[in-house]
Length: 190
Image (cartoon, rainbow, N blue to C red):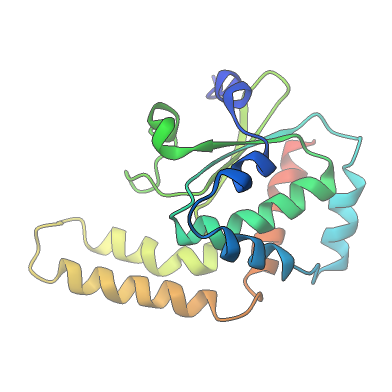
């Protein structure tokens, strides 16, 4: 049986509540959202066509201090808003029991974006980054299982630098998020 997060969804904050409560990085979070543009007309059309035609909902586990949340969640919110998808957010530190059910490589990586059905059953999961941006970290985790290895930190630093490089300075990475979310939504609404 799929994970059920109905209680967590009900306890979640509306996106604007999450934003209003931010005491760190709110300006950067808002800036990434303001800089968002639909670069893929087909994706935009498909996502807009979901409005009123799906009972899929979205639960996002996040924290204001996380750079990936600041860059990626504004894009997720643009997609869920355009699709008319009811969205709630959980602050990770207040919901460790939930994040611990959705670990990435055994760790608490955020954001975690869950598309859920009307009863709270998890249909699909996305995050913390677009696949292309995440690849260096995935490779690092696979190749470096020993945290006590003498070169572990050096290799981790290199993987993180490659992640930052792949994000780039502009909003080009956002099209990757939209594509991946569209793919998940296409599967979810079947």
